[in-house]
Length: 238
Image (cartoon, rainbow, N blue to C red; front, side, top):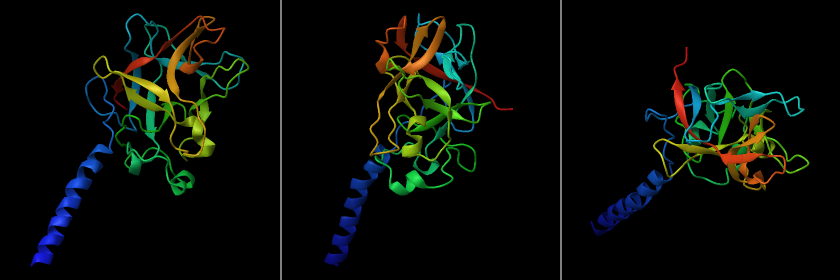
């Protein structure tokens, strides 16, 4: 009897110690402007949340002397192109576990959307981001001759690991505003990779608002730079 009671007490203690950790390990969901969870398989417009920053949604530009289109911010009265977000793994969506096991980084078929086409997008989780009409995902370009890093398209969807480390971004909550966020580059899909970390912001150059890594704000050709604080507006898929 005593031994049974001891086993039961130990089991209950283990449950109460483990249960809170399981809950804490899941990051909060990213919310759209209506307060609903962001989901993979759904389309969203990015809306600028910072008053006075100017500019509208996000789109593409073929400028900057490159064959890979760069992500840019549209004029103030435009919602830009629709975006879609895909988590690194639907079975580990938003769970804090760094670095990922090697088997996860090399597994085939690790695309973001689960078989049902939807999973919750959570804060601080690694994401592929793409324009809904374009199959390739965003990637952070390598530094140019002056150290500037631009966000462009052409990344490979899924397969989190060393070979795709430039393709993963995160969404983080900002302290001010309701349902307001910033987009980050600080991938955790490769624990052994040395990567830069920083906010994505807008660099205004020759009349174009490029989406860039904010650590390059002192770039000599940039007229001004500001972090991009956004809200997400869901668009019903047809």
